Structure formats: structure tokens, C-alpha cells
Image (cartoon, rainbow over all chains, first blue to last red; front, side, top):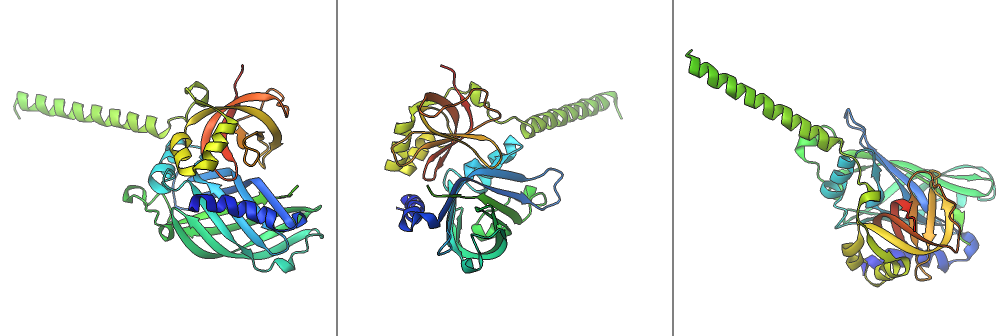
Length: 184
Length: 141
């Protein structure tokens, strides 16, 4: 039933509260890169990120398809999918949590508000409790959420073949940039 | 060193060098191989409605059939928008709940209008609340 879970969750979050409190996007952006001293940049972008934010309660959900990550090099993309995140077996990564200090964000006043997000991140079949910081940026009524954090591959049982261990860092830097629209 | 020994040495050395060069060349070609050429891959043809219905019915089964495949999806355009990178995203009518969201590759030459019927070819990356296709292109009728 897990496969249904996030669809229902996204739909539930979107319909469960008064519409004016719901901000959503289906084309948010998540990027990552590996900090290791590689001559080649190991980085990828995903522009098909779904996210729903309840501006009243702070509830925040992200859903992301790993096969939507685009690398410059086809071979890297192939290795990422087949050897690292095993995206045939685990096609999705999800986050479900809360902006814990949502009350400090004034959605009707322009500004950049620092926020702390807590919740459960699921990647490669492993769920972990996480806490990251980010910003909610309000500009002319539009809501933009950004964050930058790093994850450890071994926390999610992603192993790096020893052959390329010096090229790929154990810590992966992740950036999130979602421009939301009010739910119509 | 006898002449024949020298010959063997030279032959072995030559062979080794050739192997190295070949391996290097093959390695380089693999390393720099291009992304899949969506335009020239024979697609799986399916109506948007059926694709979304398949995912809503059983995501694991639908992934087995469509995930990472080049699909040519036909349906009615319900929405045309831009993503954060400025790329065009076309939504095709699915089941009323979910749609097929197609991120178009590059600049879209023709104007795509809502309520028109189109066929779009792209790579299926899975299902969120919609079925997602990336690196898409409009197919001419």
C-alpha cells in the first residue's frame, strides 16, 4: 500500500485544509553534487519535484522521481540509476514533515524567513528522521522555499564501489528550490 | 638475447600497446556516450488516459511496463506552463485525477494549445500524482 501512500498524502494535504492555506508545485527543483575532488563534476538536476506546503500548519511534503535527475554525462546518469540509488527498485524519494517555526513566517509581508524543517526522509528504501534549515522567501505574495543540506550516502545504504571512492564523496550536497503557487 | 626472443618481446609489447589503446578508446567512448536519442527510438504507443489509469490501478505493474521506456503518449492538452528553468511543460488529460506531465526538451517550435489533441514522445520517469515524462518532443502527425 506504500505506493498509494504518497499520492494519497499529497492529495490529502491538498484537500484536507482550506484551499487558501495550500501552496503547491509540480515543477520544483532539487539538485545535488558531490564535493569530492573529481576532475568531472558529479551533479544533477531534477525539475519535476512535487511539493505541497500548508501555510497554516507548516505541513510540508516533497515527492521526487529519481529517474528525473538529469546528468550531463549519460554514463553517470546510468551509474546513478543502476548502481547507486537503484531507481528501478526504488523509483521515488519522499519527505514528509513540518516547518516547525511556521508561525514566524509572515506570508503577507515580503522577506526571507529562516525556517527549520523536521520530518522523515525516504531514499533508497531507507527512512530517516531528519532536521534541516532553510528559508521561506515571500515576494509579492509568491512563496518560494529553499534549503541546502548534505546527506551521507551510507545512511541510506547507498554504497560506492571502491574503484570510484575517491571521485565520489560520502557526503552529497542537496539544494532545494521550490516556487509555489496557491492551490486553485 | 637471441633474435627470436627479441621478436617475441616486440610482438608482445606491440600487442599490449594495441590492447591498451583499444581499451582506452572503448573506455573513452563509453564515458562520453550520448544520452538516448528519444527521437529515433521506437516508442511504446499509449493513450494518456490509459497510461494514467494503469498507474492509478497498480503503480508497480505500470512501472514494470513503462518506467524508463520511451513512450509516445496521445491525448488532449489540458495545460501548458513553464517550469522553473523556463522549459515548457505540457499536461495531457488522464483520468480526471492525474494527468501526464511532459517536460519538453529545448525550445518548443509550435504553439501548443489547450484542448487540442497531440502526440508527445518522451521518457517515462514514474508516477507522483501525475505520470511524468521528460525530454519530450511533439510528434508530427
